[in-house]
Length: 329
Image 1 (cartoon, rainbow, N blue to C red):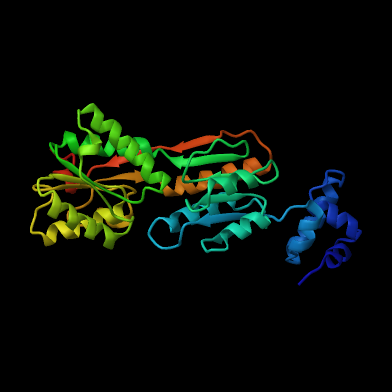
Image 2 (cartoon, one colour; image 1 turned 45 degrees about the horizontal axis):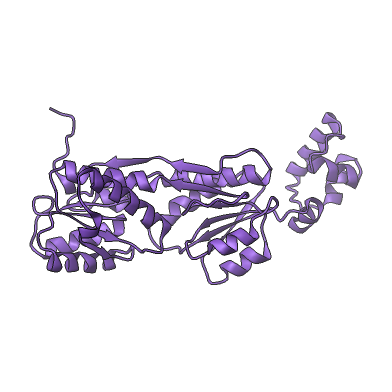
């Protein structure tokens, strides 16, 4: 592997000149800088990460802290974060284990992206600083060096419930994920707002816990059907629970959407292939992850940024709530 000395010898300049050139020092002439960079590229020179960190007092790492790796959501988000960071000189460190708190506290990175509701607000408040900015993707926080890049979950919940009622279903049930989830609570807030417009009290509507997973969603749906057989629709606060609910409804011998309409949230790939295809609220995960990454880079560079960025959502109407026009009439 080529060294700094190899590049200096080949370019016929000093080691200091090579070092300054590769750091972007403007005192080096354009002609010399061009020659040094061409030699470095030809020799496939890669600067030492440790040396670069010592020179710049940066780690050149960005931490990404997730609740877990499982499920269809995280792959798209991680790819988008990678795309957003690409070309910046930064690498991403992904963590979803019990050592998350330790890595955050020890600051092995120049900034962090958080999509993990188990990392407490107290920890984030203590750690955030001008030199250690944080982007959260699952909540809105009022802290000077924390920005929130989040889907507009409240509006998404509102759109979903409005569509259920507009489709002729006036006795909805709900399968929520977890009361500890900020995303869940924002979606419920939107549901309550829509119910209020139709004069329906959320406290009198059947609600059960589904844990954000397909198998637990199926169990929750079976419980709803047993305890509240009159419901004519169900809004599941993510698609995985909705897929489980569809399975439970089929096993109960009921028809979708004739007997019960089903709406999900996220628009995961399987949503369009389920039987029937699932009406859902689409979250643009690529845009979400990309904006989280580019927003954090701006914060690291001390550029002006918004404290709250909301990702717009879209209601995707499919067959689980009624016939879908193909625009062929």
